[in-house]
Image (cartoon, rainbow, N blue to C red):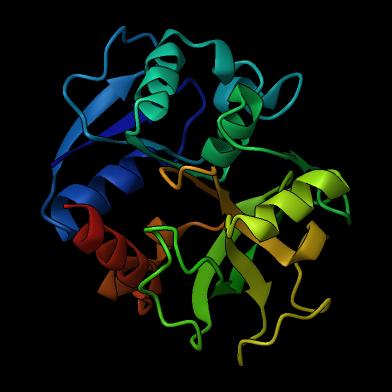
Length: 229
């Protein structure tokens, strides 16, 4: 299985993702450029974090019009796997591949710190085999991470088991205090109805190296890869 990692102008987590996938997970990786007209045989597409096009207009808004996104949308609509992390999540929402949007954090500040995530979806490949009793320690780094959707969309996300992660405290309790950005229902990640497109604000690739003394992100990747390989 080949993984394609896309670099947009302003991406800054693309090399981190390539390093984790290629050097830690020992997977085949194709580095893709935003102007590429094809996905070069990649089976799983990753949209990494960063500040694509300087976050002008809205985060992810301009990246949605990059040539490669036409191929990503076709890939997703044909059932191919797509993962967007942080800015990648924002791009997926702008493209319509995921519902809702990411607004400015409720404190109007950029937040960079460790958070804890509780796996929620029991049917999405990214989370279904994770320990639902464990709080996974995963860092965030964003200024626009507050998930928002109307009541009808939120109800649909819950009914279709599309909520991947919710922010929680170290013991796994989902509380207001554990919500770093004001996201509705503490939502840290969602998927589409077909469970093949995933978006999350926290950065598992920043918690996947033993040198960082935190491999909770590696656990998330390994669990997912074991299901889809």
